[in-house]
Image (cartoon, rainbow, N blue to C red; front, top):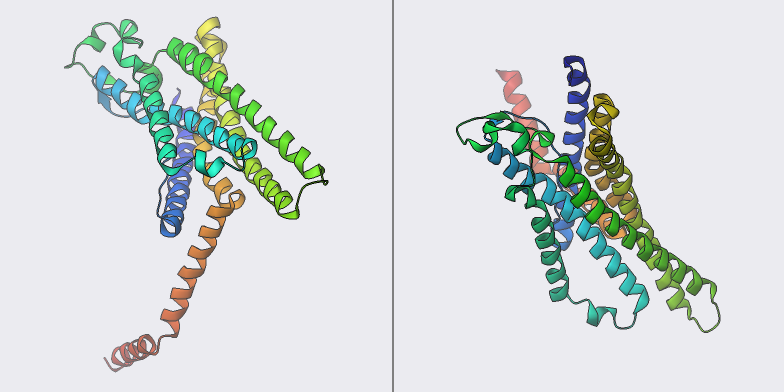
Length: 305
């Protein structure tokens, strides 16, 4: 990347990283305060100081690829849960128990780790770097595309993982929307409570589908660019266009907290309660007679001095 491009993309990356950290930290704080559970979100890559080849590769596999692959598998798990909620509404609570839910979450992370650490066993760019990759004493400039093979990204991550999951999730959400819409239109034999439940399910599914659509919109462009580069050569995709795609994929982590706060009722309520509690405490502190008296005494002492 040219020096001028660095000064264009680096500030944008910093802004995205700050917004992502603050937004996700606020979501975790609000939800943990009210519901006592946490969630995780990952940031994406950027080139940093020199390190050994396999040290850099391990960092990329552990902190970047695995988190994104976990996001994909967890999106699939959420879609399956919504599908079961609509398909078997009467037995959903007994079928999808807390214990089984945690088992599914662990399985999602296990599958993500299984796919993510494939490059550590040979599917990487060690051959193109030569002796620098096989010597622990030799340092390289650690970057994602420096150590991670494009064929691995295209064939395993994109074609074998992303696209099948996106197809399955799309089919599940289409089934959910068609089913809830049909149930809402069928007035005969459906109680008011049942119609309200289906409406709530439809709205929640729409919010979760929005998260899924934003993930696809942010990540598919950069993966398509990598596919074009892999089959047609590196010169087919300009460096500036590639970095725009990478920046878009990073922006997904910054957009998600906004979607959570406005579209997910549970998190929206947690934000509201946290907001009210914060300003209520501030108002109490401002109206506390002891604080007023202390401030008055301090002002008197300062004026006397």
